[in-house]
Image 1 (cartoon, helix red, strand yellow):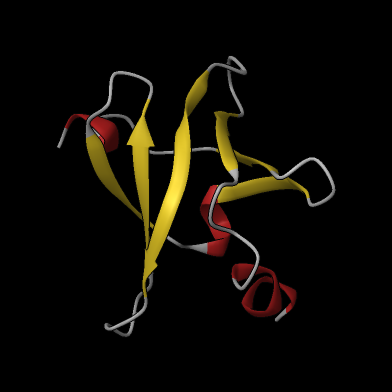
Image 2 (cartoon, one colour):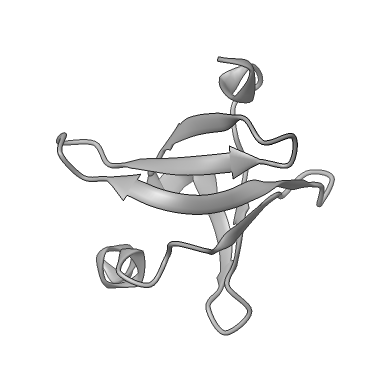
Length: 79
C-alpha cells in the first residue's frame, strides 16, 4: 500500500531500532529483483546488511526527516 510509494524516496533514509532508538544504519539501496524487497543498509560500523522490507517490521516512518523505525527480529542484523 502506502509503503510501495514510499520506497521510491527511501535511499538515504536512516533506520533506527524501535526498541532502544539506536541507529541501525542508513538505507543505501533497495533490492527489488525478488518478490520480497530487501533494504540494503550500511550499518554504523560500515558493514552492509540486508533487511527484508516487510511492513510488519516497520513501526514508524517519518518521511520528512527520512527516519524509519523498525522492530527487527533478534539476530537479523548479525547475518
